[in-house]
Length: 82
Ligand SMILES: [Zn+2]
Image (cartoon, rainbow, N blue to C red; front, side):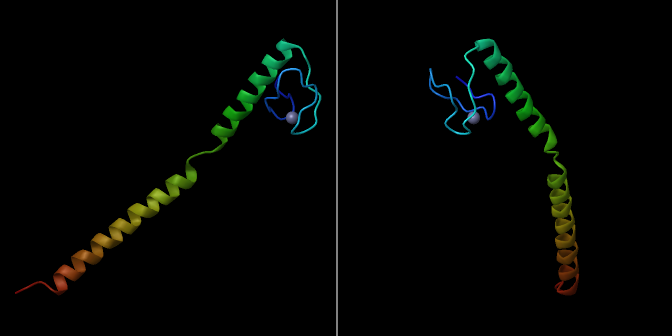
């Protein structure tokens, strides 16, 4: 038995969801539809999470590496042994 409201898997024979209190129907077809709907919702959630913040942080990392390399070159030129 799967709650159509919150997707909680309740024990067989339970008519009311222990999590949200929603009525759980007996029809297995309805349950299948609910499962598909829950999966779709999860897929949409995954699609919503665009890797944009990761992109920003990785470009930031590249910037930091470039700055570090420039600093290293400057320090090397300043303290170059003669
Ligand atoms: Zn529920």
